[in-house]
Length: 587
Image (cartoon, rainbow, N blue to C red):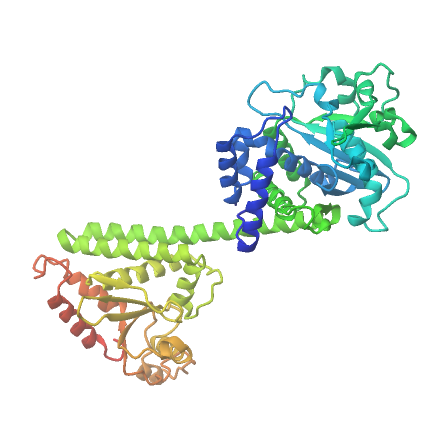
């Protein structure tokens, strides 16, 4: 149930995107991924194994932002979350934004390396780096904003930017002139970190009653910042409060929450649990877990695939995830994975039936033959089983097609419904006929895979191949009716009707034709299936019954059988002559 990026056009863009993202990614302490870590991460990302990246400890921080986005996306539809937001916006202004009818929350995601004693230090929240630019006076406003570059500066400035850019991701109907603002710093840092700012870690309501003038964060953010012109050297002062409503930093701090969501694996499990709790149409608890993991993968892939481009090229609406859309996708993914699981179970059941038949045939061979003849039969069985497996790997509908051709004379790939255990016996008899008839040949093949009839052929080098087809009537119709059915199928199938070489049609499990003389004496009226007049048989088609195949191979069990191996040209000549002699009105 893994989500592979398979579209060639998307692949190159995603590769470039992840390479750039991994190069730019830094942890909260300013450290970057090592070269080896980047290479392993990129390899895993490009293979499509997004979820399994969590196993690479150093890469968990890279995924954390996606997990936080998923956390809030799933919360929109969780039955007990009471989420007020109806839209999650990814990497539009800051990392994540939540938008509702009356409230907007800006979320900044900061991660530390996991697997060690790494914590966010208090100074990281308010530390500013100096800005020096050329010709700064040409755009002093932009330079001033760049000077306000601490984590909390950038988080609070989202409100300023949002007022000018919201129309690119929200419709006019969604935009409100008056809305509440919230600011969140989401992190995987430990619960023991940032003890100096504990009141912000407890600010679940996003509305502190009051903030002391001596608050460490307030005092740090209220300091004047200077941005400098490079030549000539000249400084310009700027303060954060200029860009905050009421020119009051307390306004932002009252709405500021430090959310310690836990390590990436804990957050991943939380998201999966929320998905499971949101499932509406799945009742079985074990099945829910499987469905939940599948939806987790699909949602992660959706976010990555829609947000992989640089913002200057991306359609901004790809960054927007709305509640109604996620509800529809969740329902669709829930049905999709259950359909896949159902088909997988059916397929596994069919595969199981084939394996059971092969095992039973192998036991029969080992019990009834000895020496090289036994080995020839086992070799034929193993070749045929391997060939079916190979075809199934190339075409997942192969076994369905095989069964429909064998029993129904059609090439449809719909699920074949085994009516009862007798159908498994019919399959076993059919496989045994194919295995036995190929055991005489060094070369084997399954030709005409798209024909209505099921074909197999055997050959020796420098000798023409002997082509077989096979049909199993499952004891449903009389022999004449079945032969007519096969002949009609040959005529209607473009592939089969175009075959000019001679071939043998093996018929299994047909009912004997009614004795016309006896029926006449008893005055029994014939039905449409009784002794139907045979359609003209093409000159290159010979009918032979399974009983004739069985009779031939019973002789190979005799101690006086003159050949030590089934594979020699003299025995093949005897085999071909025997088949020709057996072609007497299909008997």
